[in-house]
Image 1 (cartoon, rainbow, N blue to C red):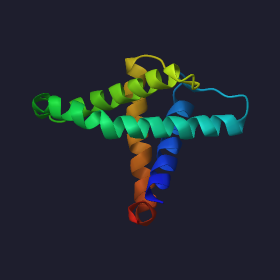
Image 2: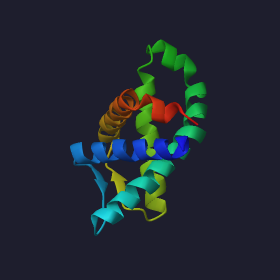
Image 3: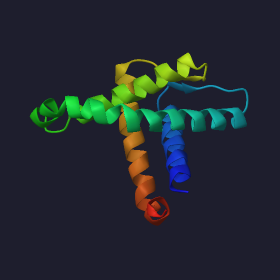
Length: 127
């Protein structure tokens, strides 16, 4: 149940970023197709964050300390770009255009996820 809630939270956060930023696109012929696309992209984003992000964070730890944690935003943007690249390779209609957009998108995703976690903390923490 916790994994499903995480997937839905990520999908909502990705949808918010796509809605707010013109250079993040989620395509589909219908609303149902776009929702399915968002859920698949959220799963890819979750896997990227679970598998690649810890390694990137560990390897860049001295620079994270040096920049007082601001490099985390860059790592999050790179994870969003990697998700876009993987989605493109799998013919999933999700696209992030450029690093600046990825940086803003990662910030939006972080804020929206945090807000949802504040509103629904019991549902996300329960197993």
